[in-house]
Image (cartoon, rainbow, N blue to C red; front, side, top):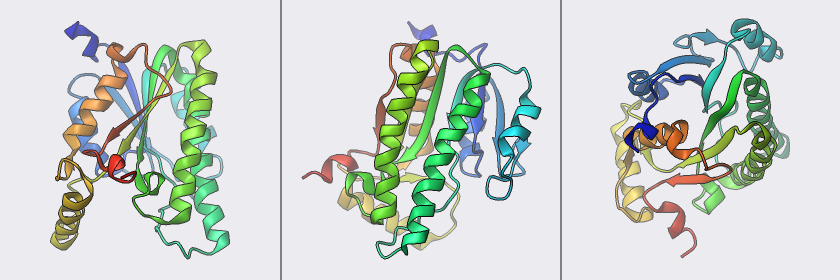
Length: 235
């Protein structure tokens, strides 16, 4: 049973190796082989999602005949500013560009996934659960839920699992702004049932679970790692 949680002999692809994600990548790389793709120079393969309209072709050239047992997808193209008064043209850009990136990334990388592989999307709970963030934020995350379920259905024939992690108030350890850390802590004490900010270890443990054989019969699901914050939005 314990072996089901092992990533030994698996090869994992990370799309979106942002600075905070490297803490997770470093921990998981201790158990298995990892290749990273993203806009950062820290990535094994660096692409410009905003400027390069042919980034998919460039990735295909880089990966060629590679095969992976899992994909962790944390790519985000446009920062969501959370303003309810966002102009319509920017609102459309935020919603469409991020949904397009999710769709395109899975369609590009699925060709390099083995039968029985696992895709893990790292998303935020944001305004989707009524926690604030503006209509663009809310629209994107609600639409992403339906998109992920539809893609999970499509990938089922190849026994590729697709699940999403909805991250709440997580300390990504990338900010030196003490005031921002205090704001996070205050917000968590008011909005999180467990009254604390989460750590990257919580995300790492969940990612390992979804990548491992322990989740071989789970697909199309969402796991909230938020200390219960999504529950308070309904109260």
